[in-house]
Image (cartoon, rainbow, N blue to C red; front, side, top):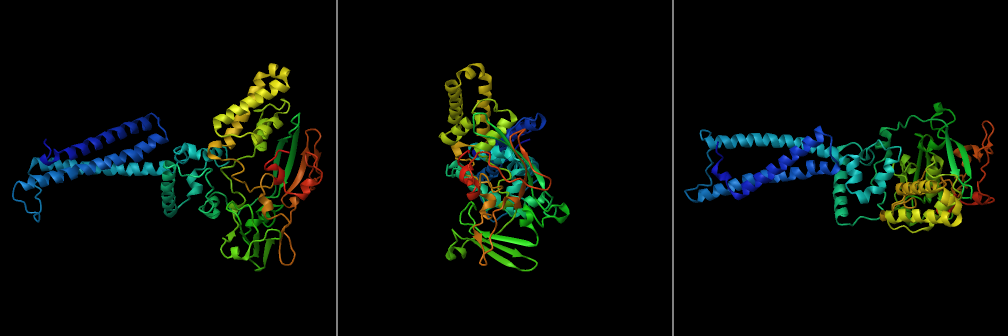
Length: 501
């Protein structure tokens, strides 16, 4: 069997070597990953995105070289460019070339189909989204793994169904790849608020909007920043919907998503933390009420150019999968779980002093500072305890380092302060963006700041000393630290977002 003499040229030989080498590497990696279950995201990128490019280049170079060589041969004799080339299958070389072309095309099409399918799934995978640009996406990928949606892929929320959004996401992704390679990405990565699909096209594919539930019990365990790390528990009955589930969302927190109600707002900042203009519309009666912040109203000139957004799930549940906890919360969780020993005196206050007051430039320096500060504190202030409880102190160091690395990312500037969570009102204004008693209508109606609208306190206080509410009643909130009535006169965030009182 002999190949056509036009095949024997440098360009065609180079294409053959390039394509064949890429094909062999692809086959080897396919066997290793498929039969031995060995591989990673980067192997997938090599197999389904890089190697196919070299195979295509090789296959393209072969006919280009043959055509160029055929033209060279044609110059040596009479050559009519208008005359069709005769393909003579009686010529063995022609038959060999045809067989190679047909089978090569079939193999190429099969590989292209498999590669395209695998490339599609790989680019839609969590590993691709979170690990390819490891440094850049580490905060999002880490917090995602700790979230309730850790079994939901990134694309189910960020892309959703439909070819249009898939193409849009890939075009956006191409620019993001360029930004990473050119190191032009912002730190921290901004939340893509403007580019997110409406909740009805993503969240509601799993969360059935027509089904709502009645009150739910929430148990919270906190520890005070005193010498004994005093435990303070609070149990809340969260008024998610009406008192009985049969009444759906006619009352309660999810009333905002009632099909007979439309809430619109205009925000004065990109993160939607300040909402100076709010409009309530009753779809049944047509009644409309506009509320405006009496202290910081929006200029009339801005109202004509500012987006008027209809409230949906994402306006409260804005951090469903990438929640960056404030230090007092993630340390409380570690103390409650025993990963930070509660019986180490002042451990809550110490960790808060470190996390709020120290400057961290890198994750490595943060780990070193946490280790040094905790060790030095107990060595200087509790020498006997330090000498007898090295293992316990090491446990506290490890626990603090672990919760830090899950919520604060110095290299990317990502932390709780950069990514506000609009659920609740303690660490972020959340509910108080509207329910602050400062939003007033023309007739004097106000959006009330009343905690009992959303929850009832069933229990609060230290274990064994806690105050318990009577049936169908709510306790009056008792601040764990005596600050008088200051908590009634200001928002919780005035202290809890930046302090640990």
